[in-house]
Amino acid sequence: MKTRDIRNYNRIYQSAKRKRLAANIRIGIATLIAAFFAIMFLMPIVLTITNSFMASSEISANYGSVFETSNTGGKVYISEKVNLKFIPDMVSFSQYITVLFKSPEYLFKFWNSVILVGPIVFFQLMVASLASYGFARYTGKLRQIIFFSYIILMLMPYQVTLVPNYLVADWMHLLDSYWSIWLPGIFSPFAVYLLTKFMKRIPQSVIEAAQIDGAGEWQIYRRICLPLCKGALCSAAILVFIDYWNMVEQPLIMLSDAERYPLSIFLSKINAGEIGLAFAVATIYMVPSLLVFLYGEEYLVDGITYQGGIKG
Image 1: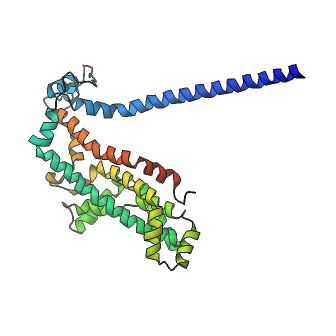
Image 2: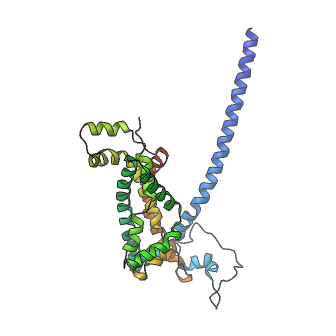
Image 3: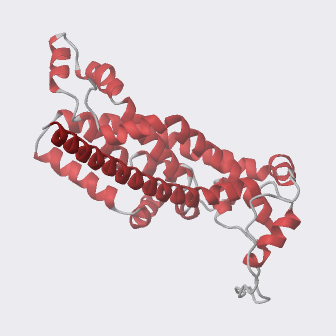
């Protein structure tokens, strides 16, 4: 019996050892695959940042053939290989000096982006939180129809609603003003959908306890729902900010004055004479998005995966 027990023990030990080895191999392969895709996703960002410290001559030597055009304005077949360089031959701050000091138009466009996006994020969250509280607290056929309409509008790409928005803005005499972009953004349905799904999972017992203590609807909304929805609010703010920070179609259609254009318009119209500046401007333009994402990453993950309720 003793010898048999030892053999059984060895058999179990070897089986467990093989399982651990197989699990470690799977984890190692998954880690390598994740690292490969992470490097591929980060490569354009790293390339943009490092190339922003190159001189214009070096950038033209490496990528000039990409932006070449024929005498008639058409595209040219690229016969030479593009040289992707991550380390400049000599670090140069000339691009940043031009962007920050010599050409104030880029800073003006940057602040145009801030002026366009800031009110949209703030007021969209305000409107969405109030609408979501109504959808979460009350039931009925009318509520279901309206909420279903929100979902349909959310699933539509912005290009589908761009023409109706333009016609409405023209009818209200809002074209060539920031209001033609603010109003559609403020009443966008995405944040309403996200916050409604969050608020509906707040335990009803918490709201009933507040009502027993004499709290009204406004107090329940302000002192209970909003604090419990902090993660969802941060998640919605991050996603809305990144979405509208990179908008291109709305300003091009709604605004005819180029001085009101955000910086994203410049990045969408890179030409051969501004390749170096494009790298520097893109690096500056990425800073707010990266800071918002890095600061709110925990709230973003918590708000999307948790989707409401109270943690124990």
